[in-house]
Image (tube, rainbow, N blue to C red; front, top):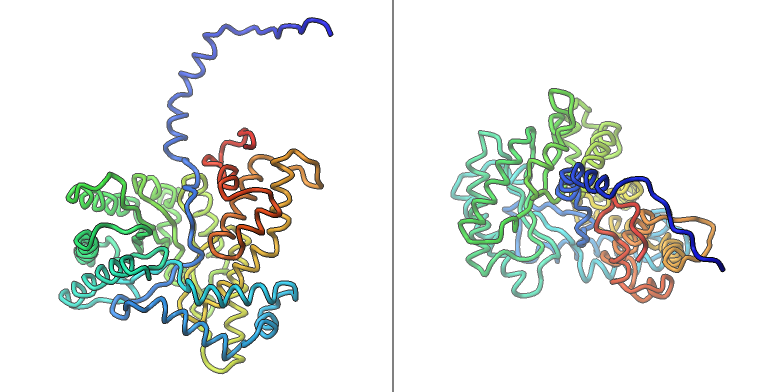
Length: 432
């Protein structure tokens, strides 16, 4: 073999330096605005409970009521699968995992509500409920009964209720600090946002609390509820929700779609207010694009059709909730709201079926990508990130087991996390 010919170039080295200097501000801006997914667990749902009804056993009571509904209306795998149209191969595994989930961890994310589900109360009463909420959350973490995620939704930042919202938030957070500090999995929700300035105001409020308690800057984040037309489209025609993410000054953790407030805001009649209405699809699509790459996650809304009453009516409500949940998952909305304990069986059935029916193919594709073996699909680094993210979400919620994923993919959880790249926009990253 002859001597390898040296590659010839024409540009001076200073050109690369000049280009680097030109793009340095852009590089910094990309890093700041689009850090990628945080890589933490995302709950599959959020359960909202009015603050006056929240007790130490709320999550367990929801699980028990969900199990009772299964026992009454679909007592075995075959009957449950028949209601939801699950294939025979999934009937047993999904049913068994749903029951196990309801016994072990019925609620993944619990939000104690001081807003619509709570209403306007005398100040002394809301003060009392805020104190109690902090006490119960702190105690749950001490005795090991806490849900993976929990927090409160305060009233909005509009003038009529702003002071009350600030006071409730202060009482709740101060109570947690007095009980030993802010727990892991703490989530705060800001509803009915119309202007980005309201988001900034809430961020500054959290900053003030951190400084008052010498907490690390940025320790407190919050979810923004998209419930008004102004939150999606500003008066000048721009996408307000994108501004809101930036207005949160790095504290935004999620965008939660409010099905009924948003639908009503656009004049949709009550009978047609649903998470699959065209106005909902438009709002969530805008939210999804605005949040992409920012590390902010999008959460779907809820259905107000409750699975209560005689069995035929419960089955109809279950089918609706299952269909809406599956529809959301296919659109990459991996979290939604649940309004009633009877929604838990179909939430988990839809989620578990979604991950179990596709995990063998996903694990195989990821294994072939990692080992550079040929298959019928040629995947790229971006797809490898999606595949690993899919498997990780399945593991987090209990749809999949570590052993079966490792057997089919040849990867540990650490391996999967390494493929779930921290920068979704870096499509040129090589597989690790």
